[in-house]
Image (cartoon, rainbow, N blue to C red; front, side, top):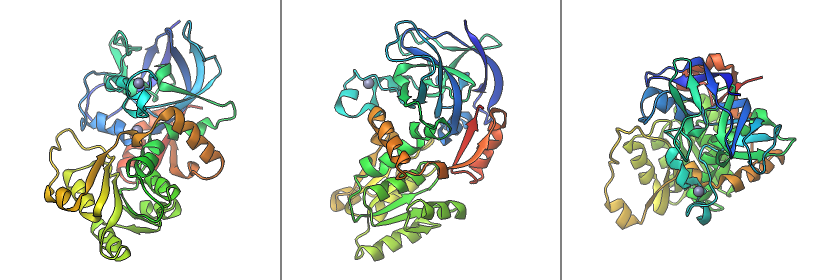
Length: 374
Ligand SMILES: [Zn+2]
Ligand SMILES: [Zn+2]
């Protein structure tokens, strides 16, 4: 039987989430319906609701970080049972495509469906609004809903003792930031690393740079609360501007420049990327993680920086993560006290408070906001 749920829906790209009654279908084969426990409030949903990122289909059930408990399992769906604990990966991983088999499952072929938010085979939708319209699911997930229905390609089973109130963080923000420093930037022991923007992604790039052995981690953010947070989470220095951080990196490196600079600004412009490239040494890496609006189409930097100084800009999606390997790894690091997660959760909201939560994000009050459904 289809069930009813309350969900935060993007009906128009006008900056507001509407909390509405919706209907969720029954699971088909290789689908699970999940009673949500917690969901994370990532900036990417805001990019959709404001129109920074174009959407191929509206309406859309918002939310792409979450944990929950399996409430119904589709027929002939191997490996899943009612009552299983689950964390979602914002990129599906099929295990069969070229990318999944090359250690690049963050580039899985099925990623092309995440903004449409439909089923991966017949492109049908799993949610229906009261006006009869069919709703997509952000990242094929739709975690801002009491119940959601997803493909098992998007789901990673957790052990029975997993802390669902916290581990939703591993499905997007932590993996993206941590992997940006560890995998995409290839941070080495002894490095000087600049992290540009310490919101929910950048703070985890700080943690990743620390785990990879960086000696100096220079966090940059105009907001004092975020600079203080970065210092608590492993940054060795914090600056309000990139100019100050870049100058300080020069003093640490005999005037060579930082080994890596990671761009984790909330709304990226070409000039942010140019600042990062200028701050790195010869042969250094600037990693571009943050999301730029669709309208941004150039980076104001001389091509000579790349030939003459052998610099590199490395783009990354999901921090080069392989979620089925990285999420269990990061869960063990959390349980061992190596990876800080509880400290990242600034404020907890109800589903009805979602617009206030995103206003707090815009006002710089949150590292990560959380919606609890219980
Ligand atoms: Zn996200
Ligand atoms: Zn794949």
